[in-house]
Amino acid sequence: MALLAKSADGTFLDDWVPEIKESSVKWLLDTIASSMLVISIFAVTSMLSAFAAAQTMATPRSFKLVISDDVSQNALSVFISAFIFGIVGSVAINNNYFGVSGRFVLFIFALAFFALIILVFLRWVDRISRLGRLEHTIDQIEDVTADVLIGRIKNPGLGAMPIDKSKPNGTAIFSLESGYVQNINLSRLQSFAAKKKLTIRVNALPGRSVHPGEPIAYIQVAEPIEKEEVIESINKAFIIGRSRDFESDPQFGLIALSEISSRALSPGINDPGTAIQILSTLERLFLLWDQYDEVKEEEIRYDRIEVPVLSIETLFVDAFRPTARDGAGNIEVMIRMQKVFSTLYMMQYESIRKAALKHSELCYKRAEPAMNQEQDLEALKRSCLFLKINE
Image 1 (cartoon, rainbow, N blue to C red):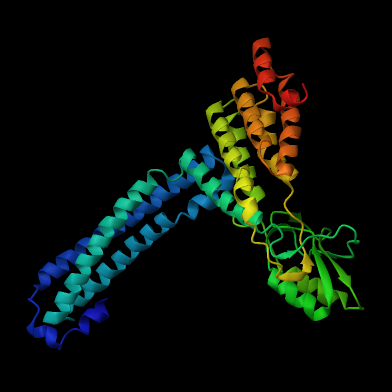
Image 2: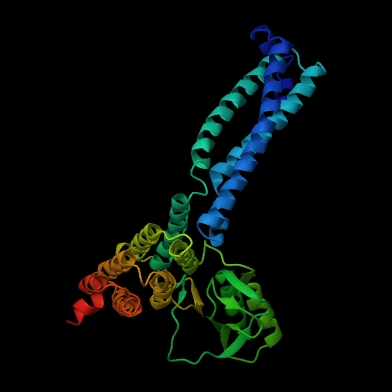
């Protein structure tokens, strides 16, 4: 901006623009520079407080989502860039770098920057007041999990072939690293498989824990091939990290939500209302199957790769088992869970119907010995999906 303002000197603007005193421009730039340094420090402090609150009030697994908040990051970027602009502009003004047109253009830039700072600051204050709060963190986890689930519902095979269980797995390809699968480069696997004329059966979807003794894939070959090259090439297509990732791992989102529920039900916190809120969130997420299952966008782009589909049973275990275990003695939580299962049982998606009925029974069997009051147990029986179906 300083260089661009300088380029205005000696042009036709010299005869058209009003003369702006150096002291006016310098005062505005000094104000921006001094205030932005203070606001930047304040912004960092507020963000760190929000991050700490998210870890203690929700779950440490939500930390990645909280720190990836675009509004806060963009606001901090604007504050720091405004500070740099103020410093550079002040130094240039103090050394008589600008003429009449240059000072005017720099003054206009400073006013525009000042207006931008005000708008960004107001937006950031609204966001920082919610960032790290439990309800906002739950909403963040729900949004990112819903996006991943919708993608998998529409495209359950990720563009690859379904696993043909009538055929053997083939030769196991073991992982060269320990950690969690964060993503898979299916395009790279397809190119390699086509080049070597083999079929690859993926054994580790994103979220799977792997180690050097764990097969991440199996290959079926039509002719002899150098195994070392295959192992190296297939491993390069698997992105393995130290932790799980929300963006490609729908189970991780459900686990994070269930952890929040378990923490809320701990004796030290004793907040069943949050557990009930989490159950409502889980209900909305599983209802996505009825909304998007009919609009599948399955297109086989990787005909030499076989990929397993999501296991509904595994998703139910991740989502409901922790709350069923830790809230077994809480009648309000147990009744709400049975209502969630009843709602999911009404869906058209058969796998979810079966899982809802099964986990309704498991939930009731956990709650039955934990209920201290006969009235509570009778109320639970009246709302239990499993008992209603088997009457």
